[in-house]
Amino acid sequence: MNLKDLLGTFNQGKSTARSHMKNLIEMAAVDGNFDDIEYDLLKSIAKRNGISEGKLKEIRTNPNHVKFEVPTDANEKFHQLYDLVHMMTVDKNVHSEEMKLSHIFAVKFGYKRDMITELIETIQGNIEHGQSHEEAMKRAIRLIS
Image: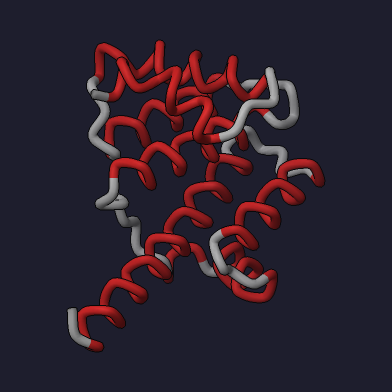
């Protein structure tokens, strides 16, 4: 892999991370209440993805400047869906619009429609029990393969 390919991979990863932040912001706001606990989770996920708080604020202020991108890696797709479900459940009040949006993202990520509800419920259960992305993925592997 040459330098141009490496830079392309890095830039795709960064744009996918920005798209993920936009998706998380949309999830947090869809119920009409973007509260502090959701913003704290957003900042934590942004940091894990190499997105500064300044960049996060820019994405939140100008979401139309960020193009939706589906991650190409299966693990990254799962991690993003996990984060979206986590954002949906972090305030302990799952709104119907949040659930609809989580289903939309799961479809966009290419998950089988007939397994999405069970997949989201599996992820929710794992989050409630404090399990990591990796532990949740182990439990959900039969649904996503």
